[in-house]
Amino acid sequence: MSHGSSPAAWTAVLVCLLGITIGGLALIPDPNWTLFWIGVAITFGAGLVGRVMAAAGLGIDQPEL
Image 1 (cartoon, rainbow, N blue to C red):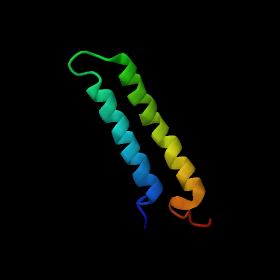
Image 2: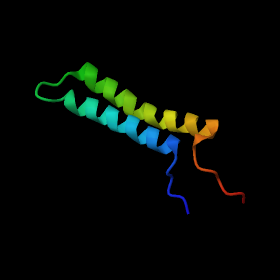
Image 3: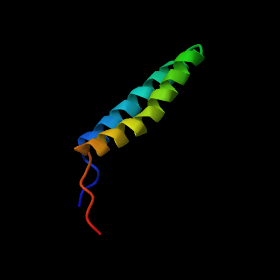
Image 4: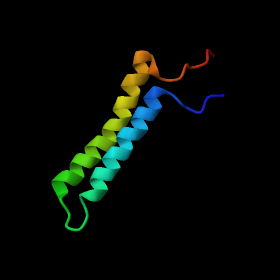
């Protein structure tokens, strides 16, 4: 049984962590809202990156039903 370990999943997780880190750091000590929203956009973009990579064949193989 696969638990989603694929290049697409790992890349999406790393991009998401990057976005969360940027967004979090943007709030310390004085909020930088522009950088915060850039971090939010990167975080949401992680899902798109994962989907595109999975469609390109870098995701897990889906079992035939």
